[in-house]
Length: 176
Figure 1 (cartoon, rainbow, N blue to C red):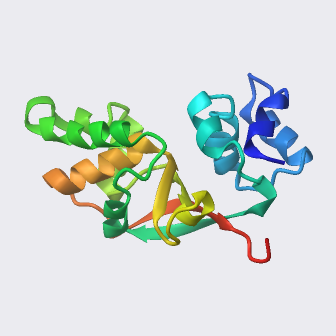
Figure 2 (figure 1 turned 180 degrees about the vertical axis):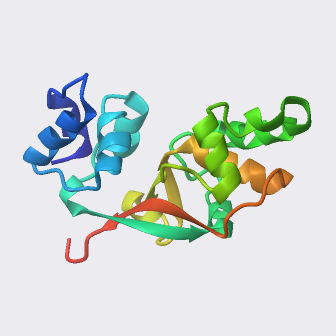
Figure 3 (figure 1 turned 60 degrees about the vertical axis):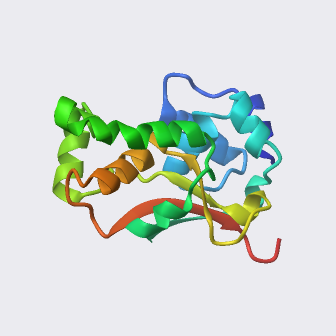
């Protein structure tokens, strides 16, 4: 099954859990968070279809891994929405005017950043070689606000950051 085939499956608009189970019944194998953030939330968006439509889902291996904070500096324009990523990172430049809302206005999310120096929900990355790029370079698929926030916090030194951050890392399965 290719990424573009996901939009042909009728999902339950009112239950993410049911939609995840439905995709698994169709042979989709990935962590639930990847299925929700990448395979459900964006499967009919033209930008995602243009970038990822021909990805063979069975060929992808997903792992929850730790990235060193400096790894995020390698992203550059290697993201689904590079301009939005840059825009999000620059929100932190308004910290002295706006305060902690530049991190997030949701209390639970803000408190997690302040306590742990990282996000609540890991963003989704592909190894750039999945898309024909250089192996080992992170390509941001989903989580531009989270990663942009991290980059802004790092650049403007708003709060202490954790040294490592959880991300979902998609790569090509060996032998495919």
